[in-house]
Length: 402
Image (cartoon, rainbow, N blue to C red):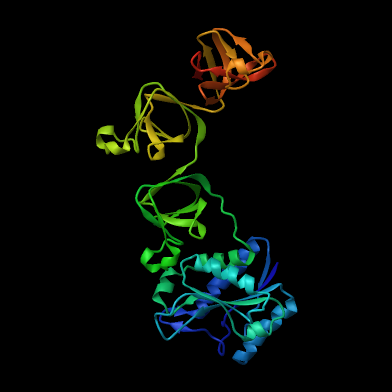
């Protein structure tokens, strides 16, 4: 797509923007406008400034912008401005179109939605016969980013984020490559649209987040917050900022089986059990548990169990009491009792006898694939029968990793 970006005002001496204390509309609009052009190009679109360098009057400045966009035959016209008001309480963002029948109405809404997601008050899409909207031949919008006369808006404003929001609204959000994992909320907290303090954000944009575990992607870790894209929506969005003092993001790990060899305790940290609230400790008996290995630290495995133990799935297990066997790990199946190699975990009596193979006491090189329903699923180095992958009853054998 081809965009004509009108950086509001910036055409002295007749067409200059509002000024409030240290904030000048010409400077702010130029910052955002240049970033918008750059970001559109980075995403493979064509973008050009249609802001005139000189004009004999304000009317001349406005007509030149529309005339250049028409001459270039851009697909869309986007004018970038900052609002100002006599009242310091006026705040928020709005986007203008020529009239409510305009083909630019949906585009205006998309841009506004992205800006509002940064925490600005939603002042809606509005229709007004501004010259640059009236004289352009293509779908045209005029963006009032926020109020430079509002302390609240200026605290929230960030040129980089504002430009990204506008571009996301124009061409769709660029997919961030996140780290898959689990957000473990340890204290009831709030899911926010930005890193700003909750008191500075519209209450409609804040959502309660209770203690628990939430699958998602970590997009960024900034200003004491996790930016996460949750698997399930909370409120009207999936992307939220969570105060990192109230939560922990745990990256997804390697799938496998936790083989508990001594009855032990599942803990919320590597601290000694005596230092932890007993309500946060859970008994784990000898056995095999499907899990993901998230980390190894201080003689503990940090694992995410397939089935919750207590309130959570993520726990620390003392590594001297257990062994984590990753799926695909090479090793040896040590058969301790003559047994049967099967194509599934079903009882032998339920399986066609032609698919059952005798397996004698001994050691067999193999890859560990999984632990399911009291069986090892292994890929043997040498075929037995017509296949390499078999299920072995775990009471009759032991898998020993290399």
